[in-house]
Amino acid sequence: MDQVSVTQQDGEQSGQITSWRDFQDRFRAAMAMAATLATDLTMVDTDFVHWPLGERSVMEALHQWTLLTKGTHCQLLAAHYEAFPRQHPRWVAWRGTWGHRVKCWEAPDELAAGLIPMLVVHDCIGLRLNEPLHGTGIWTRDKGVLRTWLGEVDVNLQRSHEALPPTTLGL
Image (cartoon, rainbow, N blue to C red; front, top):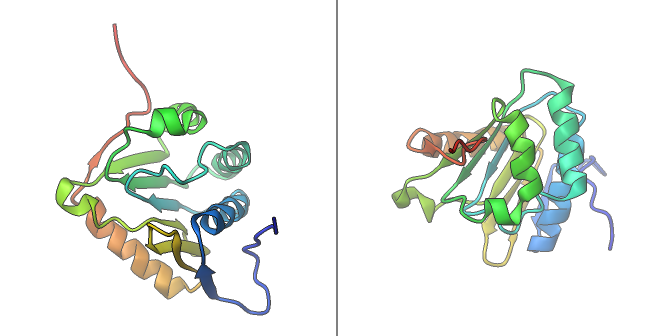
């Protein structure tokens, strides 16, 4: 498998994502990049089941990202988080430590079906799947496009509520 790079080559500012596997490879590369940047992260999907969030390389990148600076935040927006503990147990455990910087939001039912899978490494790069069933979409470095995407997410966040508590209290 060819290693996907999100480093700028030949002046490319955007390109196509051709499959879920391509998205996953680009996500891993973007997270490796985020590990070196003091910037916020935004992730959106209905359930994140296709994302490699719990993989060791992604977890290491997230850990490095959290150690880089204290002022950055990560937010996730989903329709539901039922599969998270089973699908991404490493991520859930990591979030237990970093819950003050990692917020999970759940969209109301009327918005849930319209959530478009995306990752935005703020002011750096974004991945967006316009056709989630097939995993096809685009990636871009265009800061104007990234701001537009974040604006769309913000509209949904304003109507969403916090979900997936970082700790479980019980007797």
